[in-house]
Length: 85
Image 1: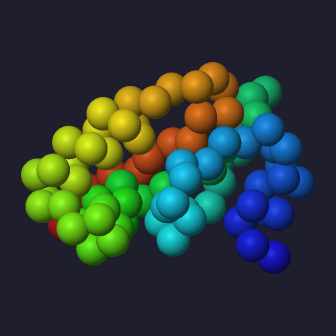
Image 2 (image 1 turned 45 degrees about the vertical axis):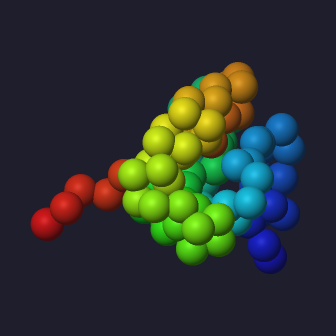
């Protein structure tokens, strides 16, 4: 089962960040709120650099403004930034 099918079972209205399915970690279930998709921020930045030829700085800026900064309601995805060791 792919992530879109799995998510549809949890929240049919869940939103996805277009072009970043490879960076999906799974979904988060919150008490009394709809489940939402969770992405790996570092993977999204890597995708932007490799797929779109962006520098690291450009990819971070693009991600922060166009992806993480695009709140579109309660089913907006979450973006996880992993803690460094």
